Structure formats: C-alpha cells, structure tokens
Amino acid sequence: MAEPDIAISLSPQESKILWRLGALEPRATASEEDLVGQLTLPIEGVRGGLERLKARGLVVSSEEHDRRLELTVRGREALERGLPERRLLTALQPGPLVQNDARHRSGLDDKEFAAAIGQLRRAKALTIGSELQVVQNDPPELKADEELLGRLSQGPLPAATGGPRAEQLVRRGLIETVSVSRKQWSLSDNGRSLLPSLDERPSLSALTSMHLKSGAWRGALLRPYDVRARVPFLEGARRHEYLSWLREVEQLLIGLGFEEARGPLVETEFYNNDALFIPQNHPARTAQDVFFLKGSPGRHPEPKTLEAVKNAHEGRPLAPGEPRLSEGWGSPFDLERSQQLLLRSQTTPVSVRYLEKHPTPPFRMYSIGAVFRRESLDARHHIQFDQCEGVYGGKDVSLRDLLGLFTTVARELGVGEVKFKPAYFPFTEPSVEGYVRHPSIGWMEILPGGMFRPEVLRPLGIHVPVAAWGIGVMRLAMVALGINDIREIYANPLTSLSEARI
Image 1 (cartoon, helix red, strand yellow):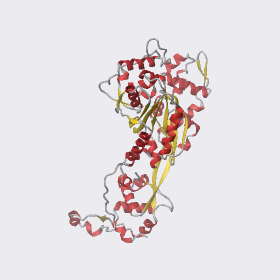
Image 2: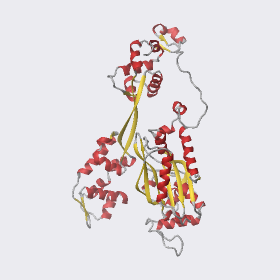
Image 3: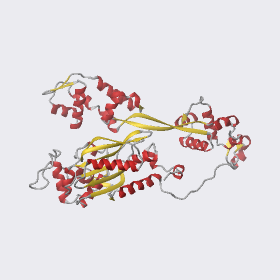
Image 4: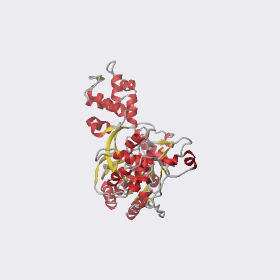
C-alpha cells in the first residue's frame, strides 16, 4: 500500500495523470498520446510525469507492437503522377499504338513502361500484338490499387486491412509495412489506493515573494521535501552498449583471420556504384535514394582502372585481344557522372578500394562504418546506419564458404536461427539474403551477400573468386541486444546505459 503523505509530494502534472488513469475502466490502459490530448499537457511533461510516477511504483507500463501500412516516397510520387498502368491506359484512350509511341505518349521510362504492361496483362486489360490495345479501361485491380494508395495518403492503415493488393504494392515498393511500438500505461495497486488521498488544491514546490504579496500561498499546499526519494547516483563513464557489442563483432572477425579496412564517408559515384557494375541509370542511384553533394567533382581513379570499368559497362573488351566480359548495359558510360560526390549509400566501396590496392590473393577484409540513405524512419529503417562490409577471396572460395561464415557469425553472436533465400544484386552472382528472427518484429533481412561478378573483379586485376557481404550490423544488434526499434540505438537514456549488460 502507498503511504498517504506521498500524495502531497506529487506535482500538479503527476496528480493530473493519476486522476486521469484512475478514471479509466478496470484493466483499461492509456497511451502517452491519449493523455496528452485529454490533459492538454505537452508530451514532454506527460512522459516525465509518467516516468517519475513509475519510479515511485504508482503506475505500470506495458509495450504494444503493431504493424501498419504506409506510403513510400515512390508511392507518393505514383499517387501524384498516377500509377504507370493508369498513365499507359490514358495514353491509349485515343486508340491502339505501337509500343514506342505508347511509351513516348505516356511519358514513362523503360522500367515504368515494362511494369505498366506487366500489371495490365495480369489484369487482362491489355492485348499485345503489333500494337498495344486496351481491353478494359478500368480494371478492378487497378481501381483497388488506386483506392488503397488514396486511403494511405490520409494516414497509415493497419497491416491486416491491406489484403493481397497491399502485398503486391509492397513488392513494387509503393507502400511498406512498418512495425510500431508504443507504451500503454495504467495505475498500479499502490497508485489506485492513493487516489482517495489526492488533494485538488494547487501545490507549490517553491514559495516566492509573488506568492506572499498576492496571498496565493494561503489556499495552496506546500509540497514537502520527500526525504525517502532516491538521490542521483553518479556512475563512472562507460562505453555505449551498442559500441561495446560492435567490439565483440570486430574481435570475432579478427579471430577468423580478417583485417580491418576503412574508407571515406563522402564517395564518388565511381566507387559507390560504377566500379560495382551498377548501371548508371539504375533507380537506386537517383536523388530519391541517396544524398548527393553540391560543389566540385570528385577525382577519378587511376586511368587504367577507369578505362577498364568504362569498357565493362559498355560491353567492350578490357584490353585489346581479350574477350569482352558481357554485353554491358547498352549505353555510353558518363565520365562526368562517375565524378559526382555523394554520402556513401553502402560500405561496398571500401571493398573496391581495398581490392584495387591489394590485387594479390588471398583476401580477408572487413570494415564497419556508417552509410546514408533516404529512408522513411521506422523500427527497422534509418537515414544513417552501420554496415559490416567484408570480402573473402581465394582460389577455392565459393558461396558455400560465405554461407558458412554467416552461420558462424550468427551463432557466435547468439542471434539464433538464420535462413537464406536467393537474391539479386547487380554486382554479385550468385547472391543470397540471410534472415534472422527478431523476437518482437519477426524475420529481418540482415545478411546479404554473394560472389563478386567478373565485371567487378577483372577491371581491378582480380582473377580469383571473391565472396562479398554487407551485413546490416545495426539490425543484428537489435536481435542480440533485445532492441525493438533501431532509433533506440541512437538514444542515450542514462537508465538503460547504466543497466547495460556489456
């Protein structure tokens, strides 16, 4: 039972919160947002009051996890401009057109045009022959997609309401499933027993000359000092739990024979994309996905490396008399674009720079560092996050070695079950994605990797197989450290830091 004299040591905000929680139905709870709206208090005041009441044992909290659907940046653009399939149908309203004319009239790029045709064929709304001809002007699937995007433009929706159309739009990158966590609060038994002794008169924590002059002190309660309150306990400095865990990862990789390498945060398009055989018109290289920097262009690499990468992109032999590696990407290589500066969107440029300087096998290198992407913030995504990059190369290295390395890392770090599935990356073949189960969020893609393509290795003078990976090390930390939201890693709550296990 709570002692009655605790009531007069509560602040007005704390008393209001207790009264509001006491007015709830039995077993009902309220979120911080609910209390803000009902009490007209700022969110900081509500959160601070709840934490102080919790420290006194007067309220308890529980955490709820929910999944909801939200529009991506690409989805908002599609909503404003129209879905590609709707734009194609509009272009074909006057009558059938050959494909080139239809694409030109609709204003779609090659990728959007191919997606529009695929969607309309599946909806049986289009026939393809010498010309494109509309069969249905308003197929139900298209109407359902537009309706769902329109509803999401008004705000997030529960994931369960989306249905099969939502799954299709998620695969197209127009919407995303976001995990949301929020606290629910209610009175403890001590808090409920204290309610009858709460006084509605205003309380003063300090007596000032203004109170004496106005006489306001006569009708107010003076809050006494609570001699039983906990005093601050100062602890010595300690490393953040996440940084300590990163040291464990580094020690594990060093123990497996890997050496550390580092690279710049500001990169050129050449090292961030071109040297990885990512086409210069790839969607992931747009301003919607990366942060470009204004100012002077970056420096090109050595002429020999630049020429070899250029030839690989254009489908030419790397040197006279050699066979070409592939057909390339069918477009001229833009030397000026390769000099554009950006905040690196992956740590793989570190691997390229390492292999360029160390072309003699075997290779065992790792690098842990920050990358930057234009992501929507949620429990699993952030505009800045860490990756653990690595390469493992030698005469007999294969994808099996990479899967074994992933399994070993997961086992040694205690993150539980791992599963793999085939994947596609422009610079590796074959490629895999490794998934680890988070106890609250579910399966998360954390372990992507594969075997570098010849178009990446040969221009760097490498002639042995090289396995490469870019582990989502912050997501891995969420599983290992029991963190439900990636944004918590950037926070510095003193209570959590003082109780950290590492």
